[in-house]
Amino acid sequence: MGQVLLVDDDRAVLYALTEVLRERGHHVVAVTSGRDALAALDQADAVLTDLAMPEMDGMQLLSAALARDATLPIVLLTAHGSERVAVSAMKAGAYDYLRKPFTIAELTAQVRELLS
Image 1 (cartoon, rainbow, N blue to C red):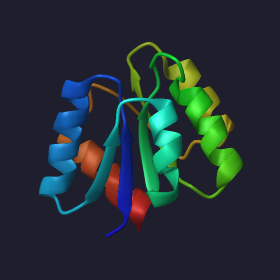
Image 2: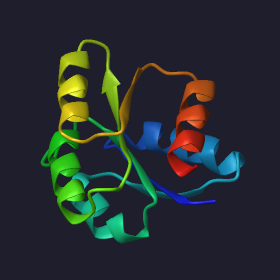
Image 3: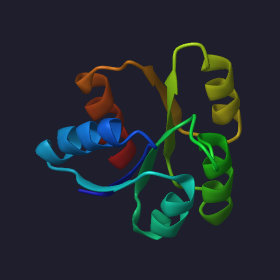
Image 4: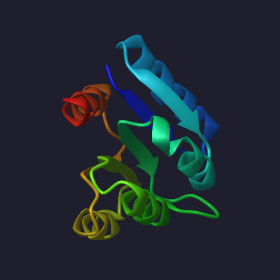
C-alpha cells in the first residue's frame, strides 16, 4: 500500500483519521502544519489536508506541493460552507475534496481511490 500524508492542525482530528486509516492497513504520516507537510512530502503517495490551518493553509500547501510534484494526488478536507474554496482548489490541481463531517466509508473510499 502507498503512504498517506495527513495534515490537520487539530490534533484530535489528526489522531482519529490516522487511527482509522492505519486500522485499514494504510501507512500514514501525520503532521500538524503545512510546513511540516512540505518536509514530509517526499514520503507521500497521496495527501489529505485540512483547508483551514494557521500559517500555511491547505490552498498554500496545495500550490507548494504541486509545484514540487504535479502528479501528487491531494484531497482537501473542508468544513461546510467552504465548498467554493474547495472547488477553486480543484481548479488549481487538487484531486478532490471531502466536506466535513464525512463518514469513515467516504474517507476510506477516497484513500483507496487515491492509492489505486
